[in-house]
Length: 429
Image (cartoon, rainbow, N blue to C red; front, side, top):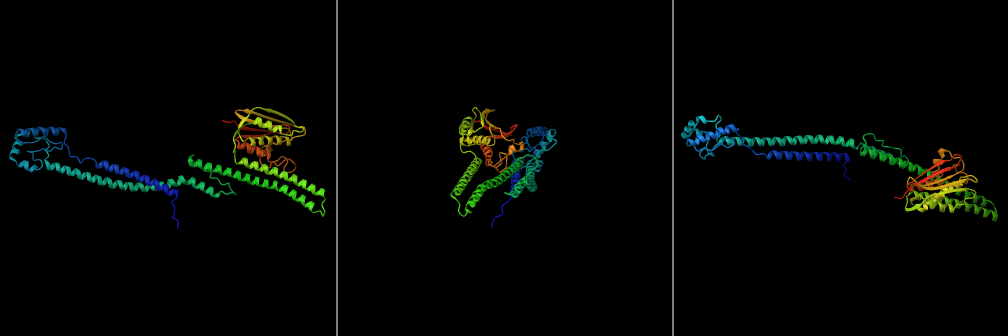
């Protein structure tokens, strides 16, 4: 039996409420401690009356009554017996009455407070303090409890609103699958962290959708291209074996045809492996001069009747020398294969705007504007899948190698026929 786990909304609500209770409790304790630390205090008399009390005390001492100067609360000691003397005792003493009559002119408008008055005032102050503290604690706790309840309700509502985009992202993730990646969050509202997260998730789904669609197309095209030589070999063998007594010449012809097809299939598989390896990224990064690579490629190229124009200036980049050589070789082979008899090929390397640049142009058949960009897709050819014009992977490998080197590649039709392919690579830092 598994213990139910609290949802993030409940946990956020409990966190809000816990922080609120902790802060509220701290405020209550501090307030209570400050009020409790106040002194009990005693009633005080105004300064004018203090003057009158002192004059009265001096007059009483002059008439034989041992009376001290008044305290701040107006109480005075008579004969050192403040703790025991009461107002009734003072008024019953004949000596006190005579002195009081003699000091009638100095008698203050307010009578001095004996000890019983002082103690009563202090007792009243203590009672008032205790009552105030009790009321303060009771009402503070009631207020804290009511505020905590409101904080829990508000935290629950706020947590729900804050987590609403997360629920949308979860729903989009659950709706997405390998066969359907069209679900999107499409979150609206302020551009906060959750909005950025939702946009990032949508972008990721778009990339995954494009990758899956490209993968499906690639697998379908690769399967078709690989089935074609197998079908040809099976047909060739079946035709020869169907004869009762095939001649040695027919058997040699069949073997030659099968060997040719096997060579084509081997080249196709090597191209597919190259394309797959570049999709995984680079494993070697060295400084490479495109001019040197292009010169090596041209030395190994059969020109035939084509006229080659080369302008090789330094263009240094950082990458895999073998892959970059394959890139240049594919471009030169593509420019030579899709050309006209006695046509021309232009190859240029240079450094433009701190980027290594490679340009390969050729004469040839007219290429439509919309067809030029599609040539970088695997198995895309100008004349469909028929004929002996390659596998349609040359420019796809070029695009993949360029992407692995963080470069860009573009293709533009030339006026009158042919194609101009431009590759730019970042220079080493």
